[in-house]
Length: 169
Image (cartoon, helix red, strand yellow):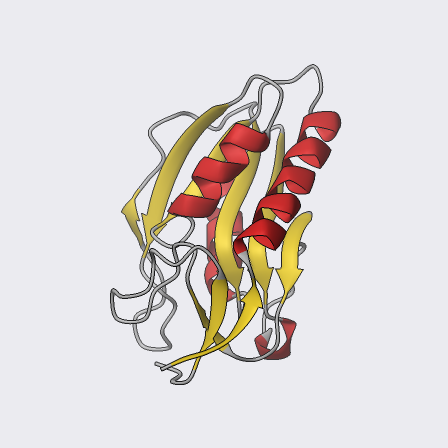
């Protein structure tokens, strides 16, 4: 079931550290709201928060996945107000971009001072919607990935590295 390792724990830690340092420089003098998308981004969000070296706040949201018939909806919305805040939206994987497009549009309507997207993984081969990714961990091929918080039917989230999975759900 588990295929080749795409990124080991050391490579992930190094890249998350680089993202944290870049965000810290870009938001120096500000207190950004780091907004994580549950559930796959939880591990990445926790590590990223520890890598950011400036004061920040965090919150989480949860959305249903995009489907042609049902669209997308918030299952858990942000607790904090976004108005006038510098928001960094943290996602595990940007695939087609449809879900992220919906989230970004919804959050922009709430009047943040700025809104940036940070994705651990970018899978551009499947992109349908035009999404600007301000902070990108890794670009990956058109393969399903597990580990580091990402799962296949609830399994493999505990793996420290990121692995290709043989089956696409």
